[in-house]
Image (cartoon, rainbow, N blue to C red; front, top):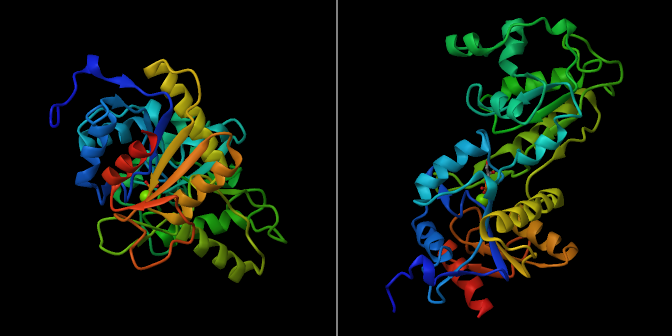
Length: 346
Ligand code: G3P
Ligand code: MG
């Protein structure tokens, strides 16, 4: 039977175990699919020596688009359908904050995309850095809005607006001006631009959708990411105010993200495969020891079920270094990771 894919009727679904995948550095690199990823997905969809289908979800720290848009893109890259019901990105769990704050600043991403994402999550009043520059172009001495940005930005009088929280949804496209605006708000009286609080203890909280200092993009070497902006902002705040800034990160390795992933996987297995019991083991395949491996290992300690971390060599982690957090297994690529997990099961 080698080489003959099983027909759907021959393929049973296992309820005993499942997979969860990181995206950048595991399935995709710099917008291009990592070739073994397509084979790995085929294997999970039943083209394997056991003729078994294995349920799986995706958990990325990336973002900047709606889950729906990300899934359309991922479906094309992986040559199979990916549904928002099996997908979490860095900002997905932020939707749980939408009822807590009224007016929020949303930072990062292309054009108006992140505003649309935030509004889709139910945030009631979403401000962007562009809106603030449109109201007062002296805010950022070296950044002028493009005609397109000017057109899309919403004109309002920020002297009358209280910004209650700051959310960094995706990578900043202009660190200097975004940091200037965030700093202005942190030093303001209750999020009112143009004011300065006396002791700088009155500013809004800052949330980041993840904390990856580096990530794996198209360059051979890792590139700085949102976690680097966080470090930079905290250092700058200290230099300007003399005080420590506490910011909050979502995404991996936060336990909350793994809890969210567990609920997603449970719903996905039930709705698409009719499996109503939790899996004994979830294999998590990632490339970043600090977020994927750390999060999986720490969650495994707390969970009643096994979360088994597998590190691949196609992304942030490079051979010759010792990962800061030790995976249960290290393999060359995502296809090897899937094979490793399946072999352990039989
Ligand atoms: O900006 C995205 C990057 O930091 C990580 O994405 O898929 O490796 O979690 P991922
Ligand atoms: Mg990754």
